[in-house]
Length: 78
Image 1 (cartoon, helix red, strand yellow):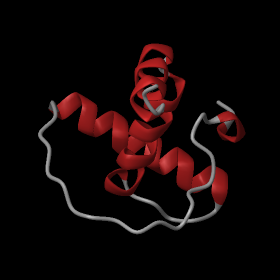
Image 2: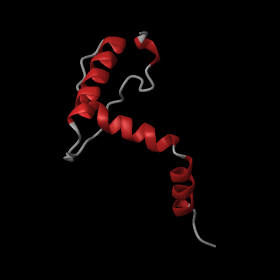
Image 3: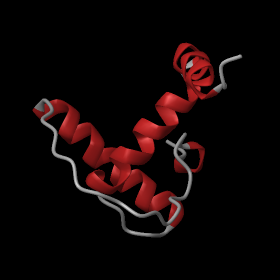
Image 4: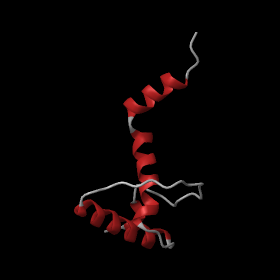
Protein backbone atom coordinates (compact mmCIF):
# COMPACT_ATOMS: atom_id res chain seq x y z
CA UNK A 1 0.00 0.00 0.00
CA UNK A 2 1.38 3.39 -0.97
CA UNK A 3 1.30 5.88 1.89
CA UNK A 4 1.98 8.93 -0.27
CA UNK A 5 -1.66 9.12 -1.38
CA UNK A 6 -3.38 9.68 1.98
CA UNK A 7 -6.23 12.18 1.76
CA UNK A 8 -4.95 14.02 4.80
CA UNK A 9 -1.72 15.81 3.94
CA UNK A 10 0.89 17.30 6.26
CA UNK A 11 -0.65 18.91 9.32
CA UNK A 12 -0.61 22.69 9.77
CA UNK A 13 0.30 24.24 13.11
CA UNK A 14 -2.89 25.53 14.75
CA UNK A 15 -4.23 26.80 18.05
CA UNK A 16 -6.33 24.15 19.77
CA UNK A 17 -8.84 23.62 22.52
CA UNK A 18 -9.72 20.33 24.14
CA UNK A 19 -12.84 18.30 23.32
CA UNK A 20 -13.68 14.79 24.43
CA UNK A 21 -15.56 12.20 22.38
CA UNK A 22 -16.36 8.51 22.52
CA UNK A 23 -15.95 6.11 19.61
CA UNK A 24 -16.18 2.37 18.99
CA UNK A 25 -13.03 0.31 19.57
CA UNK A 26 -12.75 -0.59 15.88
CA UNK A 27 -12.78 3.11 14.90
CA UNK A 28 -10.05 3.83 17.46
CA UNK A 29 -7.95 1.02 15.96
CA UNK A 30 -8.51 2.42 12.44
CA UNK A 31 -7.53 5.92 13.60
CA UNK A 32 -4.34 4.56 15.15
CA UNK A 33 -3.48 2.70 11.92
CA UNK A 34 -4.14 5.85 9.91
CA UNK A 35 -1.89 7.84 12.28
CA UNK A 36 0.89 5.29 11.79
CA UNK A 37 0.55 5.53 7.99
CA UNK A 38 0.46 9.33 8.16
CA UNK A 39 3.60 9.37 10.33
CA UNK A 40 5.38 7.12 7.85
CA UNK A 41 4.24 9.14 4.83
CA UNK A 42 5.27 12.55 6.20
CA UNK A 43 8.18 11.62 8.47
CA UNK A 44 6.71 13.22 11.58
CA UNK A 45 5.23 11.25 14.48
CA UNK A 46 1.55 12.03 14.94
CA UNK A 47 -1.11 10.31 17.01
CA UNK A 48 -4.79 9.73 16.27
CA UNK A 49 -5.90 12.49 18.64
CA UNK A 50 -3.92 15.02 16.65
CA UNK A 51 -5.39 13.81 13.35
CA UNK A 52 -9.07 13.80 14.34
CA UNK A 53 -9.68 17.58 14.08
CA UNK A 54 -7.96 17.73 10.68
CA UNK A 55 -9.99 14.76 9.44
CA UNK A 56 -13.23 16.38 10.59
CA UNK A 57 -12.27 19.69 8.98
CA UNK A 58 -11.44 17.93 5.69
CA UNK A 59 -14.72 16.00 5.83
CA UNK A 60 -16.80 19.16 6.35
CA UNK A 61 -14.89 21.01 3.61
CA UNK A 62 -15.96 18.31 1.11
CA UNK A 63 -19.61 18.22 2.23
CA UNK A 64 -21.52 20.22 -0.41
CA UNK A 65 -24.72 20.56 1.62
CA UNK A 66 -22.78 21.86 4.62
CA UNK A 67 -20.82 24.32 2.46
CA UNK A 68 -24.02 25.67 0.87
CA UNK A 69 -25.74 26.01 4.25
CA UNK A 70 -22.65 27.67 5.68
CA UNK A 71 -22.48 30.09 2.74
CA UNK A 72 -26.09 31.14 3.36
CA UNK A 73 -25.31 31.86 7.00
CA UNK A 74 -22.21 33.87 6.07
CA UNK A 75 -24.02 36.04 3.47
CA UNK A 76 -25.34 39.37 4.71
CA UNK A 77 -29.12 39.69 4.43
CA UNK A 78 -30.55 42.27 2.02
